[in-house]
Length: 601
Image (tube, rainbow, N blue to C red; front, side, top):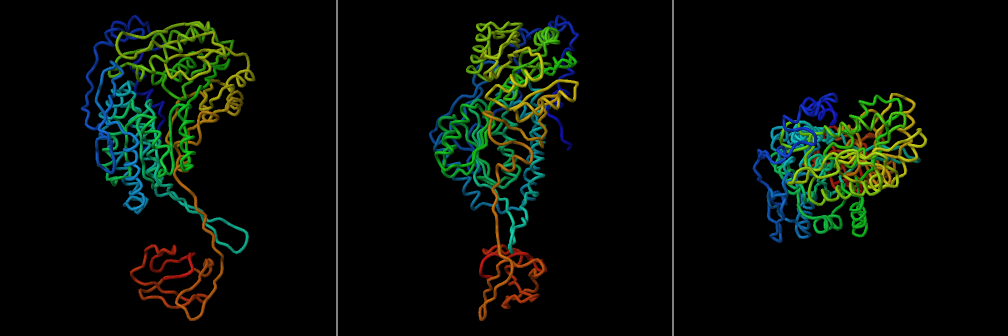
């Protein structure tokens, strides 16, 4: 399956259903999805085509209630009503999950499998994901509020694609032979780190599951994953599919719960070897501190952003407006890398502003299960009120409210697509991560100015550039302090492309070969070349055998001879092809380049 761009998948699936830039919005009002949608579109909700089957924690291959017996409600953001009650995991549940993961890593079949066998399980899981595409997409939409078309035609296919990508890596992880000064033979071993604790966010529950679980499993680790309390349902469903794919018990454990209890217990656990977290910068700091205060476990963090989207003076304004709109409003604006500071050159600013306002006014908002809907509700009441608070702050700080600015309808957490102009760098809406459908448009004069202003932020997750000039594209892509720079595109998330931030946007990278390094540790093995022989002994202090004196294993009788030049050393039959505690590994007739330890059998 060829690599595909996330944004392209989305565009192909949705664009044909949306009004073009020249369409009169009044035409669409008669179809129930006009300017900011209609009350009817919000009140006449479609019943999700899925039954909730998995609400318990998955620990050691079994779905179980929380140790405390507690549950918590998970909410439909379209209405604010309860979808289901989910097991509320806390420190005791994390302890049980970590114990299961530790046993699976130390004693279970997973680390003993060949890398090829692990890859086959990942591939089978991807097949099951495709078989259950619509069920996963329905759960994602119901629990998160994102458009069903986005989930079913873009996110779930990318979810499967990511696991196929990591399945391909499973049997290609290996060490190196390293040249060293002196008579030494040196090699590195790349080994799984052990038990990985993973905490995923609510904005892309499935994709973040794949970004973390995929490389961890491909590298041979075991996992305890904590879901976001807002969106536990798809991770539990996916975990069940992993069971069907043949993943051994204890390799993947899923605990649903809250950050201060389950999340903190996982980050501070002494038997967790590594933690990966995606979420806010404030919470990321807490995770880092807990990891350091416990067993100093390594941490990767993918955190917040306040990404600039820069429209240069030579830009095709119509195309720039559409891409800037997508960069900000996609996924209800709930993207860590959203292009939330739209910098527009003063020569095209006025034209851009009018067209950006018109495009936001045409954005279709409503029940995310309905066809043609671009924007669903915000995730919950807390985020809903937070976004409205930022809108109020923008108005009070004298930015110009061009459109939107209020809730939509009387039920659920829908917010009108909002555009501010005359935004200044010191305003809260230009400095802080809003995580909602609020576009702030700022004016600039030249590249030096916009580079300085774009980089004047604590964040550095992503940036967008729109220009016809190769010089401008090269200058900006190298000057902007961000982990990802998109030029004339945005939200391109191929499985092989690394993603992560500079500054307070995180530590480390996810996706691609870079993500594997998060779940591997390197061991250096050094051995002195040459042979020292002992008389009258069955044991031989071999050190490391030189390449031109590679030991050859033949026959099936116990070996008793010392190594002398090209002397053959025989191998006891029952040990053939097995790993000896001394580090020896070989098959009959195989050449052995090194043997560790001072004794051979």
